[in-house]
Length: 215
Image (cartoon, rainbow, N blue to C red; front, side, top):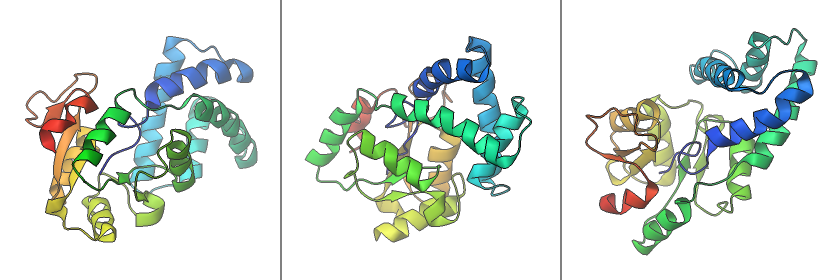
């Protein structure tokens, strides 16, 4: 069971590319400070969404408000749509994805995706990367809860017709994809592309090419 953003799709570099194209169109400088702030503000409000305190559209609006856009909902939605156009154009798969999926297929294993994000957007990303047939895709829209709630994993596994112990979770967020998966009874491997740890995680790989050791 793969995570999507940061695991199959290169979310961070796609965001950076999108911001460099979009920020100047709304009167902002696309420098390193602005990009870092975007990431920090996004994580803050996405965390509130994961706790189900706001819906997905509202967390986007709150991000823009914090960044200095003092407008109503319709205007904020329109502004964010401009960013999404650039983000979706920039979104791409990591270069180790095809090789990893070939390894999984060679083992005869089923694949699925469990991702935090809006269902339409996440399925669109997979389609643009040529991964629409990867397997079932579950989002908080489908499950009614988001990672790191262990119930998201249990719900996905149940819908897959499997038992938790039969499923391996793989993702780049140790808190969301590894610890939460284990709390739900799944096996889990941390994809630590940037080498940021935690260093004491025994099941940690730096590339999807290293996934073979766990299949």
